[in-house]
Amino acid sequence: MIKQIGIFPSPIPPSSEQVWTNQVILTSDGIELVGDLYVPFGKPPFPAVVEITPYGSSRLSKLGEIYATRGYIFLAVDARGRYRSSGTWDPLTHDQVDGQAVINWIANHNFCNRRIGTRGHSYSGYNQLLAAIDGPKELQAMVVGVAPGDPFENVPFQGGAYDLNDLFWLLSMTGRVCVDEVDEEDLGEDKFSSEEDENENNLKNMRESREEKEFNFLVDKMLLSRPFRDIDLRFGIRQITFREWITHWQFDDFWKVRSVGHRLNRTAVPTLHISGWWDGNGRGSTAFYRGMREQAATLTAREAQRLLIGPWDHDLKSPDADDLPEEENKVIKRAAFRDPLNDEMAWFDEHLMDIKPGQATSSRVTLFLTGIYQWMNFNDWPPLETQSVNYYLAAKMKGKIGRLQRTKAAIGVKESAYVFDPEDPTPFAHPDVDGERIPFNNVAIENNREDMLIFDTKPMKEPLALVGEPALILYARSDAPDFDLCAKLLDLYPDGRAIYLADGIIRARFRKGWDRPELNLPGQINPYSIDLWHVGHVLRKGHALRLEISSGAFLRFDVNPCTGGELADETESRPVKVTILHSVSRPSKLILPICRDPGFF
Image 1 (tube, helix red, strand yellow):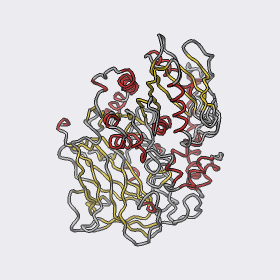
Image 2 (image 1 turned 45 degrees about the vertical axis):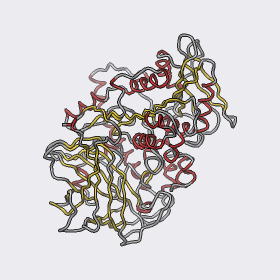
Image 3 (image 1 turned 180 degrees about the horizontal axis):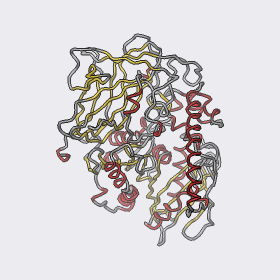
Image 4 (image 1 turned 180 degrees about the vertical axis):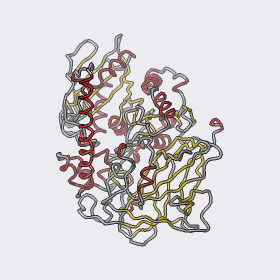
């Protein structure tokens, strides 16, 4: 999970007629932001596309050449405090004013026609949204790729728990340049080998496999050690941003000025939102699409939102899908070859050059539906044909498997319980997954753990399309002042494999709101609402839907010590007994977005 250190910033070529390097943009507080300008052939002025990145703007050189060939000025800028730009990088703090300074600078450039778009993925997706709040009128289009959702909806906190992938990201971003893994191919490794070399390589791989296991064991130990505040020190780095963020382990004024969702009524920019079903930062795509459809400052902007979700991970590539049947794995890999850059270009052509989009990029919502593995167009998100349908939790059918059914449980056992131990936390998935959102098979975990509850629907007699935003409402009590409720949705195949679809978490102390932590009274029954993000999946005939409930998702989120102490500073832990109620008076339920679009079947 932690990459080897090998810092190799790309050299900046000298300026030429088509590439003007080391352009300096001055911010209002005197910071010098430095970037490169890629200029088209032909007579100016041109429309411009901007990306501000903390990952090194020189990495965008190929993209800059592509945009220039298409007739756009492309401006790639190093974020404040990163690579060539001066100042101190303080994530999410200066992006609104810095982004607006860059947009104003290019708008006033004599080669620009004052029609400007912004683009970027991940951090460079979110920083666009910040710059669009009360943004310059010259900003006329955005392409926001795999942008994380707001704090407590996605990163660094989700449902009140700390997202560990955010921790590893911050560790890799410590300092002015990225801490990258060196690819042996880049070092000129000889690809022609003899049988003797091959034997030597096999021994080397065995050693590396053993070393990797030892390293993973050490990482697990560090993640389980307390206090959580010092986890960066255990990895050998003092990460200032991490330490600042965990002092704000609730939604306060610190996060309000860094969050986007509650300020979307101050944006007015046509936006293409891009993500993948297995994007760990994917909550931003659907949340901000819906938010801007409902709240953007103008009717024109509300109508000019588009959503694209494909068979991709956070890198917009095919995920590791080896746990799927071989043919399904192949179909996903083939479908993932769709290049979202084509959708991006069509979006800017439409909004910056007034070129109408083609049929493949003109729909409001385009989704790759898993289960049937097809690209489909929809009228909105969620589709207008989607209805929320309740599936209630009920007593066990056999063994430890409970039921998901359309009616409340009027008879039978009215509650189910398990014991969670923070010293042996429930894993998110099997060890090869490392906390990633990929289509993994979780049956091995289910069979070897007693600290989880499982509820299944009956096998489908007809296909069931789930397209929208599922949610879970649980009535629960415990004997501890704090605990987590973690949930997963899985597709239960006829052959017994249970393939991950979506997940969510709620930390008990945040049940009344991210800004109002309140400890749980032991024995008190409370309702808990869990956001399961989004899904675009068809359960095929003979398949069932499975719901897993636990109090841990180790390697995906931090482990709740369950003591009720300060989450960053607690050094002790305690086991907790958690009871889920499923009765007529306390009907725990899964709310599914069922799409009745006849075009499916």
